[in-house]
Length: 483
Image (tube, rainbow, N blue to C red; front, side, top):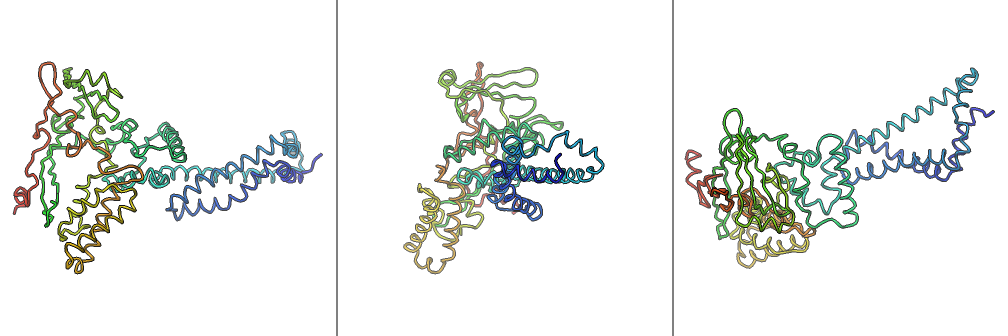
């Protein structure tokens, strides 16, 4: 009969006689101290580098688990199984019923259970920490560096920069988690194989319903009244003249106990259902709009060539209008060159004291460069040359201001243009307003008409009242400030 001391010997011999177990044991032995140390460090001190975290949770972790699996596969299914024949139920039952052997077997069982528990704890902590790492903004935005840099940069400059990526892109519950990881695996393959699209398309079809995302924080029915909006702009003259447009935007309400729906948020009121037919993937061509209101009233608005557009549609689809149809890029916003430069001047990143700085900045950033590095160099050369040649005294006296302007113009460019991903100015369209894209005018064009002649209006006063337009020191602002 085998002795109890044969059990650990059998384990060791079993591992040694099975090359599968031997490889697994070597992996576990090498990985375990680094893995447990890294996990503890991350738990108590936090690891900021996303690539180091990725190495820990996506390489060391799976390597440790894989090593454990190899050890047991080799022991019980390969050559090592002959050496661990002692581990049978009959053998353990015999030893546990023998008083002289009971204590020794109990110790061995205790050691086995203890080591198993250690492995379970390590794997559990690894799974928990790995899950949170894969849900982090750093993982979403920085690990896949080239394709995600534009989206992550735009996100960091948006109003939603303090909302975690997963709050909008991944829903709660196991089903959304599984869907996201399956999708993520496909995207990871695309990155490794370098087959991802350049630029990445706006995911209008893949976004979760607005009521599951936007309306977890925003409640359209609670937005009341009008909103005063002031757009600052700098003209391309020598003084970089500051002009302002003042709008009273009719945000209105989606309807609640205090009043009926009205204004812009009328479109998403519970008592109204707007179903539109889009004839293209981007949902820019809308030949038909169906409006259903309380009481069963229904109106169908159609464009003059609706039948033709529907017949030749590349991606015909019907959709109930919600927040995303207007707010199609709520967190990944790429500015126009004019707005980007104006914002930097307004933030004093570009000194307005420099003559023609708006004009020269616009000229510098609208050249089509091959890389951001090339763009930054060219912007610096162009601005330096301009002020050295046109304003030599100013160039010598205000060199720091020129360097500040160069840095500001470079920032405006690199925050919005990513040549490596084929993202230039105005690559992406936004449906908010109608300044640079169709936006509201996809439907509000006075061409969509019902059978009895009612049209969808494009009257400016429907959604906003213009109080001043590109005016220097508008009187309305002085009035509002009590000056």
